[in-house]
Length: 303
Image 1 (cartoon, rainbow, N blue to C red):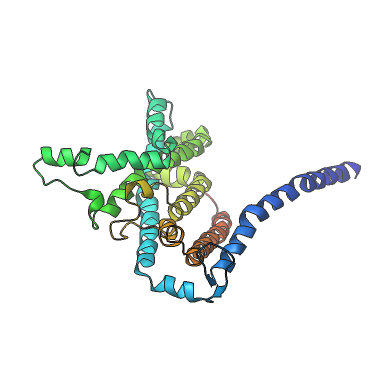
Image 2 (image 1 turned 90 degrees about the horizontal axis):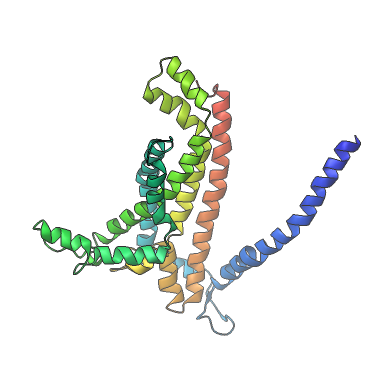
């Protein structure tokens, strides 16, 4: 009994030691700023002095009526869709190829991971040069093949596709390394037993690899969706949200229409909407994971 009491007292001491500083930091850097943003969103304010012109929900009405905001919302969903449908499967396929201790695996891992190490602004500047219609690599390749010189980032129909390609290039190495770490935690004896039982490669992948890699995949999806919603640094050096707002995301829209135009009340409304989207996804997704695990356990687990 004394041992149990000591363990309980030890856990309580740890909680009392670490919880107050964490709550203080969370309050100072998350709760208070979001509370202020919510308050500012009810005013027409340029950022100077004290907000005085109360407009109620007018900023939110203007937001929903704004064409550029709808484009930004659609672009964010497009980035999420490409991340989930292209980037993550590509990262998983590459991880499966490079997870084993084959010759050159470490070199290829480093090559694919380097884009993620690059700062977003630096990566954006590099790809801006690649896409440049006068001196870029894309223009030179098109000219060499006899095609008209494409001005990719100046074309409303092509600019977003160019950004999607950069997003896949930039972040798929991070997810690949996550999957490699997850694959290396799987017991090799399970694969040996599956081979002995005569399982095909597809059966091994669907009934051994994927179920055991489930927690890593869920974490990867979480990072991919939140990163897609908050994408900003990569777009600003490339297009700054143009041409004609065709590449705006929620964060670049907030910066372009709120901060740079000194419409702090309107920008705060955008920030509140962005915060709500992120919180709803985070809490909703955190409940989906445990539910799927319980359903799989009730169904008998991995067969």
